[in-house]
Length: 418
Image 1 (cartoon, rainbow, N blue to C red):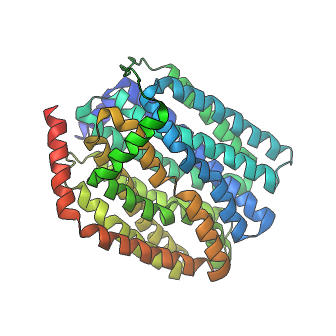
Image 2 (cartoon, rainbow, N blue to C red):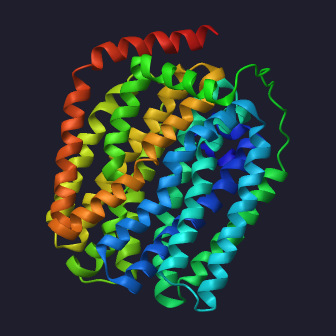
C-alpha cells in the first residue's frame, strides 16, 4: 500500500483488510483453476486427437454454470455468502485432489476427465454469482467500482500466469503437477477466508418461495433495458470469447507447429491483454461512459479473432490474442461494474447470476458449437465466423446506445443519492 501511494497509485478497495485477503486468496486459487483447465484440455487432446471431443469436454464442463447460476443467485440473496464460499471451497478441494491422484496413478481417461470436468462446472456454477456478490460485503459502495475492477484484475492476472505456468509444468513435469498446485491453492484461499472479520449483512425475511424470487429476478432483468441489453450483448460475445480456448490446442499443434509451451503462451497472450484492460479499469474513477466501452469491445474482439485465424506466425497470433483479451475483459468488467451500480441491492445476487449465465454460462454452448464447427469447417474458419458475429452484435447494440446512456446516468444518480 505504501508503494502504491508513493507513485500516486492508491487503490481504495485495497484499504480494506478483508478485501486484501480476498484478493490474494482468490488470485492464487484462480491461477490453479486456469492451470487445471489447460491441463484437462491437453490430456483430452492427447488421448483423443479430436476437435469434436474437445468441444464436448468444454460443453459438459461448463453446462452446469448455465443451469445452476440462477440457483446460486437465489442463495446469494437469501443466505450468508461468506458461509457459502466456505462450502464451495471444500468441494473444490475434493475435486482437485481427485484429479491429482488419478493423474499421478495413471488412471486418467476420457470418461474420468469428462466426469470431473462436470463436477468442476457444478462448483463454478454455484460459486461465481456468490463470489461476485460477496465483493459488495467487503467494501463500501463508494469504492465498489474499484473493487470490481480489481476483481477482474486478479482473475485475468491468473489467466496470464496460470496457462503459461501450466504449459511449462505439462511439458517438463506432467499434467498432474497442475492439479497438485490447484489443490494447494484451494487451501491458501480457504485460509484467507478464515482470516477475514466479516460483519454479517442483514438478511431480508423471506416470505416467498425460491421460484417466485427467481421469476421476480427474471422480470426485473428483462424489463430494465440497460440490464437486458448488456446481458444479451455479453451472452453473444461470450459464445465465442469464452469458448475459443477450446480450439487453441489445434492452433498450437497443427497451425503453429508447437507443443504445450505454445499452448500456454497463446493463452497467456490473451491474458496479458486482459491485464492491460484491468489496469485501466482499476484507475478509472467514473462509471459513466462505460456503456460505450461495452458497445465497441465486441467489434474489436471480432477483428482480433479474424487476424488470429488468418495468422501462421507465432508473434502475430500472440498480438491478435492480446487484442482479444483486452477487448473481452473490458466488456466483461465494464458490464459487471455497470450492473452492480444500477441494480437494487435486494436483487443483486440474482442479477449477478444472470451475469454469470451470460458470461460463463454461454461457454458450454460455445464449446459445443465451436468444436462441432471446427470438425466440419476447420478451426480458422470457425473463429472467423465468430469474429463476424461479434462485429454484428456491436452494430446492433450501438443503435440503442443513446437511450441506454441516459438510463445508466439516471441509475448512477440514484445510487449516489442513496
